[in-house]
Image (spheres, rainbow, N blue to C red):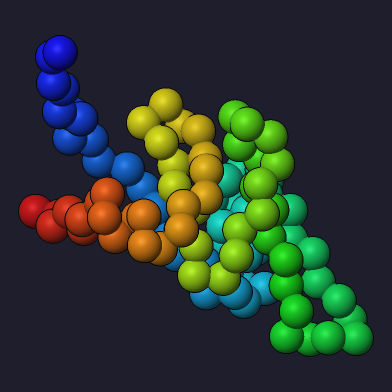
Length: 91
């Protein structure tokens, strides 16, 4: 059996802090492909869902939203993100 190594790629990502303000920033970054739900009776409540290739997915506070190499978006749990990605130093 052959073995393969994943090619190194650079992606863009943002970790959602659960706030409405950042959810709106993420929606802008995604060119309107996110849905931000708030509740006037609960000012601290915000729900974020994003359109992915697999359909609409919920983003929980602390999750990362990733833009893939072909421009697709998807959520990623923080522990998986930490195991898979490291920050790139811009030079």
